[in-house]
Image 1 (tube, one colour):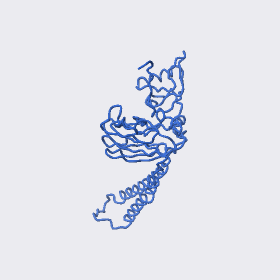
Image 2: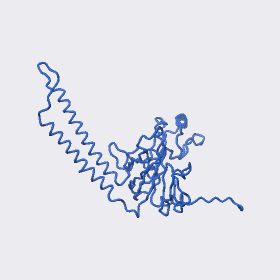
Image 3: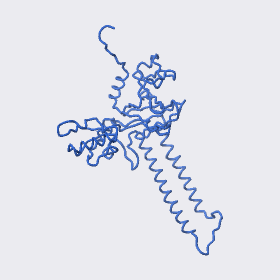
Image 4: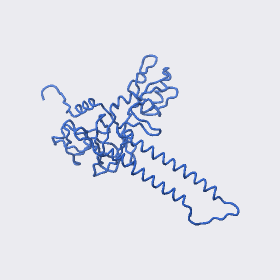
Length: 335
């Protein structure tokens, strides 16, 4: 499925890469792993040599004295020097280039991210670009960030839970904190990761590649599957791209629907598709991008995920306008 994906840069073992800075991190990871593999081979050969060279033999006695040769010392110094080169010569320039200087604040989207057991809360400033005041005394079930609705700057603010909307091709500054324990804000496909610490607000910035919108990603990741070999466990996070009907015309699997929330329902649905003569089904992932928590933060840590929806510039502006406009309810009549 990933082979047809054009936006990401695929490593041999890494997930898709959709950020502007991520390829440099991938390159550094490659170099470190090549070096680790070389060390593994070198020390492995040395280990086997010592096993054979100093095996128990007749006429030989073990001598418990320090090594007097210089070869091992030269090898240890060389390994240490190369590790310093990796840190100072390669890692620090990559990190410095990513972190300095910060993006231009006049064209940067700022988003507050608050982690809690077990969800991610997102706070957008709205069209005015100003965050409303927050206070823990205002926290409720429907106001998880404690936004003070009496503050004029909060009038157009946007709150979302486990739903992270971001534009492509624009710098995004994420201000990360936590309400309870230490979490870890991580987006593997953007090569972004930062601990969320109670009492601290840590900024992290990144930019999604231009054009990598969620809808485009779904189209790129669409794939056909044989119903003969399909299983619910393999396909349960996908949705259908078409309507599939039985011989009487009744819809078995509707476009946009998934295979059910349980193994029993999904397996029955797949059996119904086979019985109706449907040999192949076209599916796409329901949520191709996610924010996860990379810190073991509690017994339901695995549930702490947020769906990422990436928009083009116009789409993101339209979403902000829609979400920041108060809903007007027409009750009709005179009230």
